[in-house]
Image (cartoon, rainbow, N blue to C red; front, side, top):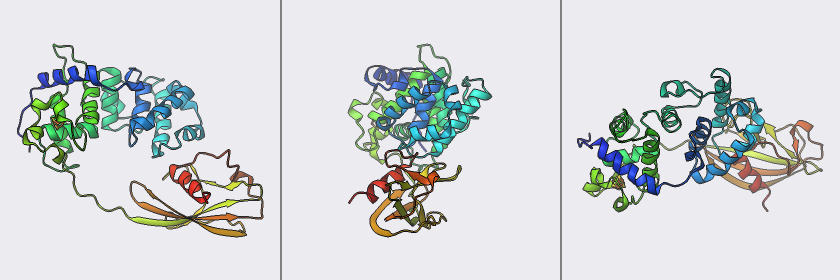
Length: 345
Ligand code: SF4
């Protein structure tokens, strides 16, 4: 367990002084609108800032308010979400928008405790919205903050076991009560995350440029890259399946929609067999079947190898499943990869 004490006020002042001149511009930092901040934070889970920015802008253009998002059909949301991955987030986004539009009359609650009750909001998202949209004192701990804190305090216990200790240390440094030097929780939350993202990076942290270097035990010990300590990861189970890219004589492609709940809910896919899930190929006569290579994809709980077969049918495809290549329904990243592979000679 880390024993050192860091004085909160000088730490905060150093950090905010640096942040004022060094942070990256991001569209969701220019606003205190909880809807925009919430949208960005849900998108940023598992996705990089650079990838999120165009999606964020497209969503705000299509759904400028939480009410418009709540009223939109899930198909439209999935269309705009396609490519961001982790599609459960899009379903929870919709559910959360409907809860705010209905139960909260279109207004986001402002406290961490109330925000935590909303669909899809965990401790980090609730804290970051409370701090950055409502300027509430809240301890914000994302992966960047975890790294900074484990280095500042040389926390040797491995993640995820060390999370409560990291949170406790992060809270000691966060502005949890009004201060005498005009410290805004909104700025502090952004500043400590930005430090982790740009200075205290996983590899080769830029300690010489770090505004809080004087407080850092890992820097003093000369081994920042040893933190955070992580528990060994278990190997993911492997699954394999065979997917069929079937076209008819008009050039239409056969796709089917996945169930409304579960993995890749409501998205469209090539029919497939095998142990991905117990699905059957469509009962359509196929005249030509050509192996078209394979792709691999990693889900959170398994790795998939998808073998691809390109096939044609002499029959007209059922209207509900026939799609012109120029007008495809919402597809997952996996299925986009599969289609590209299947039709690339
Ligand atoms: S001194 Fe180095 S290791 Fe310590 S917080 Fe700063 S960048 Fe991270």
